[in-house]
Image (cartoon, rainbow, N blue to C red; front, side):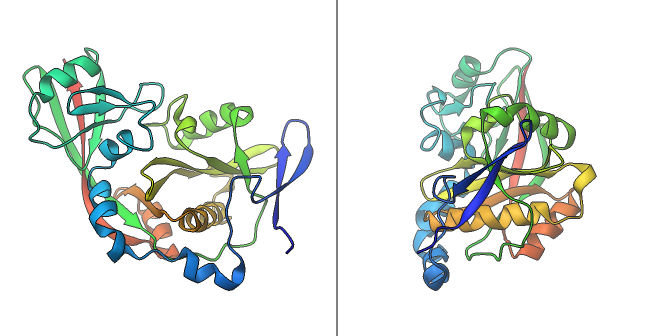
Length: 273
């Protein structure tokens, strides 16, 4: 069977290298059995996957990102160089205050979604508008367009520059190390990108889906999203994402792609005085 390929281009050197989908870390089933193998039965997975989705920071820190998690009792967080995210086992878990003090520096703010404790003395909790948590259980058609290439250390400066411009709040120097990232280059510039962030073995969050303003309206975000949705499903995981209700353009994109609104999920910051 002929192996499908993508192009990997070094924008600085102007050199294009052919990569198979497998070498790029992508799994694309044969077209004949694509739909059956890539459709997620959420009823079967509901007891596990939906519980993880209700507390996504904690779930990821206890599983997929357990090797980088910083823990103190019922509290866990990402190192600051990865993400400003913190999770708790439950809002009512005992001795949360001691765990928070062990993991969060004075004057530092962390963010929580899904589950958040009451602020202990000396802390300030701020509630933001809940986020839309969306899932996709069936594959998407991938529109024709420019080559998609995996992003690595050689592209880190370009990724940080693009996220600083259009996605500045939560992307850090080592956020790329939390999962795989993919992008589209045009005219030697990173035009659009997508990546993986949270997740467990059975669900995977798509994040940092963004396009440089100079390349808006070309369908790059949709192309990247469809590619990663299909690859995630082929790996046996449920694709999900979080989007602000204050970002109607992104909401409309995901709705147009067929993502289903699973729930509105709480979103807070917690700051130590």
